[in-house]
Length: 592
Image (cartoon, rainbow, N blue to C red):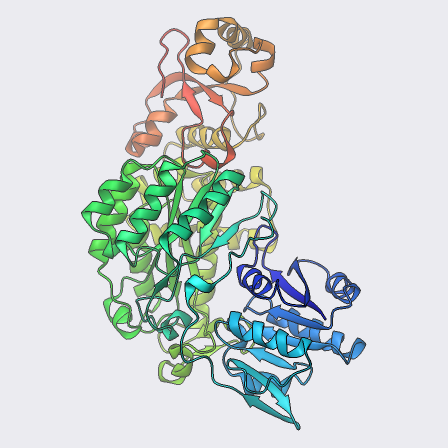
C-alpha cells in the first residue's frame, strides 16, 4: 500500500512536525510512505498534480486554520478523479465539530482527532491488511451513510514512545526546524486549544539533549520549540538551556515560548550571560486589563512580567517578542490602548498584535453569544466585533498593527521612532494611530511600498505634524537608512554632505593597516579597494549616534559634524541584535 502525507504550510521556511511523527510511526510497517510539503502560496493545480502523480492509495492531510479551505478544495477534486482513494484528515482544525465537518464534506473518509500518532499507526495497519478499523480510538469514519465517531484514547501516548521526527534527515538549512520537548500546558486560557489538554509531559531529558545535538551538529538556522510553556518546569528548562549554551555552534538560534511571570531570580541570573543571538523568547501578554484576564482564566501579574522583560532586555543578548490579542472580552478600544502602551513601553524587539480567532473547541467559541461575538464563519474565524469593540475600531487597530509591523518590528526605523515617541508623544498607541491616519489619508494603504518610499513616508509624516528640528530628524533618518541598507547611494530626499576630499580621506583611512586591524579585523588581508566595497563612510552634521542613545538631544539641534563607518560584514542573524557600525572621527578615533 502506498501512503502519502501532505503538509500545506503557511510559508516555505516552515516545516510540518506532526506529519514527520506519523511517517516515522509507520516506517517499519509494510507501507510505502511519502511526505510532501507545499505552501498556501503555491498554485492549487500544481499541488493537485503533484499529489495525483504519487498514485497513493491513501492520503492524510494535516489541517490548520491557514490551510483548511485549500485542503478541502484539493480533497473534493481528488475524490472526483480517484474515487477509490482513502482521504484522511488530521490536525487541530478537524479535531472538533467532526460530525458537522464530515457531513458537509462527503469526500472525507476518515478523521483523526487529537494526538494521532497511535491512531494513524493502527489505521494504516488495518488498511494495509484490509482489516476492520471501526474500533480504533481517535478516529471518525463513515459506515452505512452515517458518521461514526470513536472516543480518543483514554490514556495519553507516552512521549518516550514517540519516534524522532527527523530520523530520515533534516529539511534544507534555510527552513525552520520545529521541535517539542513537552506536550500540554499548565494554564487554561479560554481562547486557546491548549486549555483542552490535561497536564504537561516531557520527553526524557537525555533524549532531548541527544536530538538537539543533531540539529547543532548540522548547523541548522533555527530550532523553534513548539512547547506551549517552555519554562513550565524550571529545572528542565534550565538544563536544556545550559546544554544549548555548552554546545553553541554560533550558527543555530533557538526560539522558545515562555511565561515571564513564573521566572525566578535563578533563571534570570543565568540568562544574563547567554551568548548574544543564541535564544529568542516569545512572551504572550495578550492584555493588561485585569477584568479581561480574569474572564479568560489567564493568571498573570503584569508588574512581574514587566520586571522580568525589562531585566532580560537590559541584558541585550536575547531577542524578545511580546504578544497582544485584540478582541478579548471586556477589552474595548481604550482598554486596548492602555494594554498597548503598557507593553510597548517595555520596548520589546518585536510587538506582535494578533486578532482573536474563535477556534473550534475553545471555550470562548462555545460561549461566543455571552460576549456578543460576531466572527467569520470560515477559517481562520477572526472576530468582526463583540459587545466591547466594534468593527470600526478593529479596522483602526488593524491599521495600527500594520504601522507597528513596518516601522517597529522591521527594526529599520528604531532611532527615528524612539526620537518621535520620546519628544512628541506620551502615548505610543497615539503615535501609531496618528501615523496610520496620515498613511490612509495619503492613500498609502492602497498598495505596497519600497523600502526607500517607507523612509520617505515617515519623513512626510514628520513634516505633516509640524514637529520641530526637521533637519536633525532627516539626519537621524539617514542614519537608520544606512544602518539597515548596504548601499553607497541615498534616496533623493536625504541630504548628503558633499566634500571633495572626503572620498580620498576614506581611502587613505583604509590604506592605513593600523585602522583596519583595529576596526575591521575581518578585512586585514584585503586591499583598501576591496574593503571599500564592503563598508560605507558617511558624514553627518549632527551626532546621530548620541541622539539614538539620548533621544531628547533631537530637539537641542546642536551641530556636531561626525563621520560614521558602517561595517556590513555582520552575520544576517545578528544584525538586529548587534551594532553593525563603528563611529570614527578621522582625527579622534572612537569605537562604539
